Length: 82
Image (cartoon, rainbow, N blue to C red):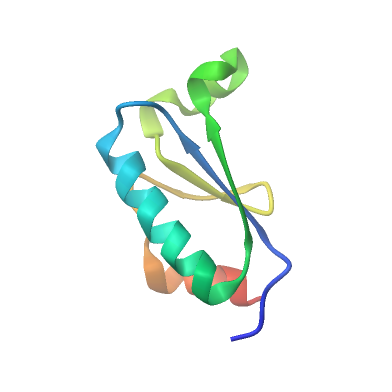
């Protein structure tokens, strides 16, 4: 599959098991789909912590919230295929 020009950001925090699972999934998908991948710890920013703290991990695609708690692979693939 050709690389995409999408930027995927995982909002995470240290010690979060679901965050670790999401990170592994996204890194594996990145090697296949070729999107730009970033991670941001919500606890390093008061505004991020205030908005996302109870929902981590949160996946953003091109800066827009795509989902939280779990990576829904089929839905994610459709989002980055556009």
